[in-house]
Image (tube, rainbow, N blue to C red):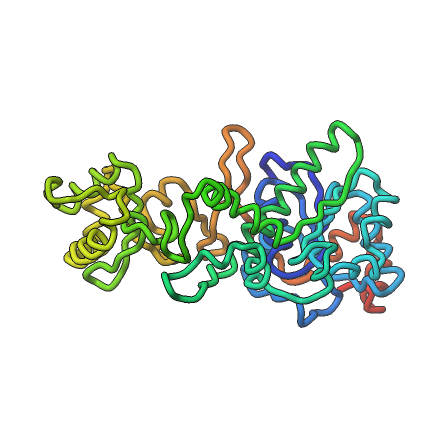
Length: 379
């Protein structure tokens, strides 16, 4: 492995999207991640070939309900820097893999856990998904068209932005703190907390009266005509973000408008007319024709690309924003480093395929591994 986290050992208790994403981020940055799954497939853990959420780590299968299987996972955690789990509150404790038990054995362990609601609070025991968490965080209500209903932004805000990425950040912060204290700790990540954190700027604007209106009627939610998406002649879309005066002037130039005929774009009284004019003008060319006209300018006009199209955009190609893993495009590790450059991601192992190798690393011989397999303790 290579990258700034080289030498850091992570045990991942297999789960759904947020926790695996956090472990993918850690693995991308060079950590050695071992994914611990059930000895036999479970219906509540989704996996598929070349899943980016399982890349760049080893994958083992252990029956933690058996005393021997539990002890194997405890031994893995004894030698780890980090353990990550994404179960409902209390589940890891009932498995015998809660933070109290593990930190007693390995006081330097950073125990990262993620749930939707958090480990406590009145909603903690209940089920939910991304849409529920961002709803009560105040992150869902602002997204949508004026007079329309809130629109879920896929599951980016809760599962991945406010969830997995915040968990990875918390784990890294705890590893830094450990250098001073010598001690590990529990990182309690809630997708509600993380999604609320992502709305920090919005709250700042509200507090000074710069976000006064309803959904789709404010500066950065599509309410302003200079910060919105528009349909082009081919039915595809362009994104316009010309907020500042100099960028608006550049956009006016790209659009071919006479500046003398353009009213002040910062005056909300002019927004309806400007929106109509923008829509009419932008429907006169295709998306890619507008992108070509805006290229090299500060007009803040960009083509709205599908995920597939994004992989071949010249800027993304130049930056290496996407990489091929086993012949399929995936997002590359981020951010970039001047010295400790992460290695290219490696394809996921076949489910539980690394069990024997990892157990051998714990000191088990072939005969012992064969016995555990025969008894169903390991995959």
